[in-house]
Amino acid sequence: QVQLVESGGGVVQAGGSLRLSCAASGRTASNTAMGWFRRAPGKEREFVASISGTGGFAYYADSVKGRFTISRDNAKNTVYLQMNSLSPEDTAVYYCAKGRGGGAYSFPSAYDYWGQGTQVTVSS
Image (tube, rainbow, N blue to C red):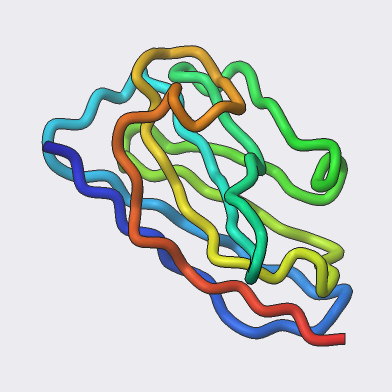
């Protein structure tokens, strides 16, 4: 079993920044990909960003490219999502997920464990 715990969410004004963290524990594997997804009120879950097991490759949704940065510290079993230039459209519950393998993919079925989520609210 793997447990994923997100933190760092909160309320921020438009244009501001937040840094989300996702700490993994249990039967983790440092060489598996990690991803971030989000679900806004009334909308379906959508892909945000993913990072390969080695950290050498990152993949972003077009809506966040250039504003968000995903990174990982395998020694700490933690993945981060630095979010800059936030807008109200970024308001959502953000979830981290552990990949089934090392590749950084955008589809949910590539991930086998999910965190409980952390709320991000961007006020205008």
